Amino acid sequence: MTIHLRPLAAPDLRTLQNWFSDVETAKRLGGMLPLEAWFANTKDAPNHKSQLATDGNLAIGMTTVETYDDNSAGVSILINPKQRNRGHGKRVVAEALKQLPNGTAVHAYIDADNPHSAALFAALGFRRNGIDPDGLTDFVYIK
Ligand SMILES: CC(C)(COP(=O)(O)OP(=O)(O)OC[C@H]1O[C@@H](n2cnc3c(N)ncnc32)[C@H](O)[C@@H]1OP(=O)(O)O)[C@@H](O)C(=O)NCCC(=O)NCCS
Image (cartoon, rainbow, N blue to C red):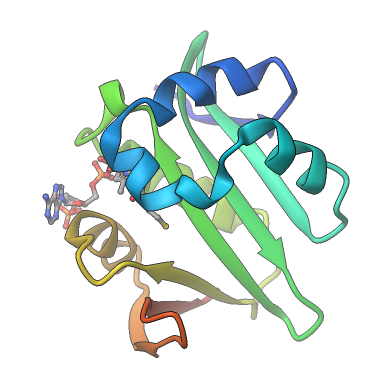
């Protein structure tokens, strides 16, 4: 298996829409809805990079990385509901991390009741760094 990341494109929104019919996806990432507006607002933003992860013709997931002027970044991850629990989440985030400069402080903000995501980031070396103002657990990794 080879995971490949490429920029998210408008036709991919149909794939994402399908993934958002999954209750867990909508619960965790519902702030991206409606997807068309989210995509229009983010696709050309200079600090925003959403990428589709593929393995051959199969869409595995999507990752978003936002970078900031202070050498920090925020990362989020979504895996195709039919492809979960196979290590893809870890693989896709690891690929996204490769694209960031060394020294970047990479944050992931995770719901307190999302142990699956917490385990994913912990397995990649992210460490708990407190609770953010929205009540999300801040996990950080210094690349
Ligand atoms: C969270 C999500 C990305 C995980 O993707 P995935 O491909 O299933 O994750 P992985 O297979 O790489 O597993 C990651 C870790 O979670 C662990 N895990 C699996 N199910 C778990 C559960 N219910 N509770 C705790 N840990 C769990 C795995 O064992 C693995 O840890 P390990 O390496 O220590 O064994 C996926 O479920 C998803 O897209 N959820 C909806 C969106 C979301 O919550 N995104 C996170 C917001 S940043």
